[in-house]
Length: 345
Image 1 (spheres, rainbow, N blue to C red):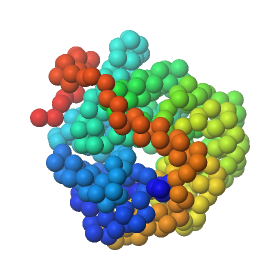
Image 2 (cartoon, helix red, strand yellow):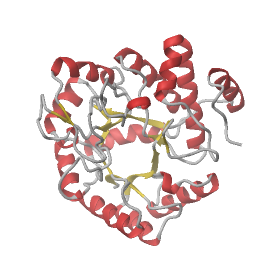
Image 3 (cartoon, rainbow, N blue to C red):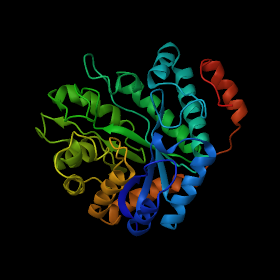
């Protein structure tokens, strides 16, 4: 039985220590960071080695939103639009905006599936507000719930058509943050009336297979406690008010918004109601340090069982379904909508 965690690897090849960790701990998923993505052949070999270590076709995740959040980078891989680019097209022509967003994410899915990557930590459903930190900024599909949800739904459907499960983020909303949760705990002081707009965007895509939490403290509900480790925020807001019943994963446990040891963070997240722990070691460079952090999180993770396992199975099932697709024709139309974007050579 896999562990309820998603781990990473330190570079473009699997080290012997990482292979041993994957064999003994058997994480439900593995996420590839930019440090692990050099070329198509290299990524395929890395995924094969991960699968060999776990003894199964472990679900492979990546952050491939487009724009500045893309682990697969040009010129080896195509350049895809920012959320703001889809929003601008939607403002001019909603029908074309939705078409472009579906098509762009269907093309992303084709790239990912060709590498045996079947889960994408996208789309962003956060609603940025004026004066907020730019950690979300141009990643967003706009500032109004109906538009953001419509584009996010198109993105999810495009990914799904290519056999890739999407992960909406950062539930219940990161757009009001005045700080970067990678570095500190943002505290949102907005009241219930204001936050209802943020929640509404996620409620409109509550059928998404997976969602990633926000390491944000919402002072109106659970002061000083990040949503990731807040039972109130998960049970009453995310599960209750928003109505999300898919797999809920943490944002990276290594981010400095959370205090205490990694094991403490892991236990608190599970106790609050998260299904799966995510850890990327994004601040570290040394492979041994990364391995040590991964080991701590994996050892603190429970077995993936019960409702969490049922939710995980829904995401796993998306990876085996792919609808017919003509990449050349899709790129032709995508170039019409976004002439500045291009397929990799």
